Length: 471
Image (cartoon, rainbow, N blue to C red; front, top):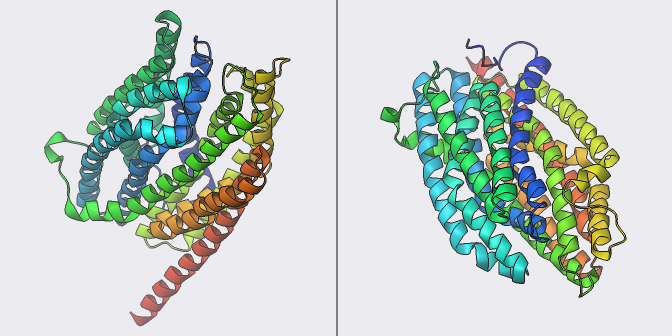
């Protein structure tokens, strides 16, 4: 086997899952660092609302971006399952179909995002300087979504094969490029949100080009060639069947976060004095949310491992082995969640200060700091529940039950949070009421996902045993 690949269907699992997760985690954390660098460096610009503007655009950006990222999950599973089966031709067809789909979705998502950015941000309750900054940032960001889409699909293909090192090396280099460009555009050129958006777009373009080159040089069934670049109907249907529910899930998840973001703006307007020059609740929430992104990305790396390992073992019909996949992934993600929880709670003050959020005698600054501290308290008190929810969803997708995972997330997370905002928050409008909805929804989704995984696994094992007896 290629040294960059991991044999997921044979041998002990714990070490292999760690070998898969660690470089994947670093890679994903570098991607999160793109956005973190945007917010940290833009806090040094002349715009006091810059951090808040970038933070409040995240749900809207994710509303579109999560759709094609969801389809990249389909590419990951289809490639992994065909590798598990040993079908070389279908691996190649899935790879080239995925690349075509990534370009189409990237362009379409970017155009829709640019055209709908201002109306969506206005509906959320944004106005004035905050609105202008947010529109400027997302417009430039969406211009680069085709590159972001290609990057996510190529990374998904490599991970489906078991190669997490190549994305790590590439994203390390482009991550450094992003930081350097941020510093140049903000500190040297004197730009604000437009500067960091431009830096992110250039870094995403570099990632896409380099990853395609790496995939073209692969000596495996996943090797990319422009001559083979076409959409295979069978591969496309398989990718859509798995990716569409994941994309819808991501979009609906972001939709619920959009509604929550609009509630954050309402709280800001309730508690902020009229003479304050910026929106402190929005800024504090954005800073804390951005830091949480590191914890989420770390635990989400185990979710992706669960998807790939389950996908390959399901393709090889080694259903009993999936129990070990689940146990190891739950344990690893629990440890990772605990580690990040400790780091965030112990070092919250210096970490938040990187975003210009710190305790101060100034009223606005103090409101921002208290907002961030409140969010940390509610989110990280039960963060392992989010990690467990993700693992269950990943195993379901690896089984090919993407629709089941989407339904669970839709009902127990998205719909629950929307109902919560229009009922509990409407009756008791406060940050605590908003934030408590997160751990409650995580716990419900984690439990239902786990039950579904066990039921589906037992069904496959029973069918396999029945078939063996009949033969």
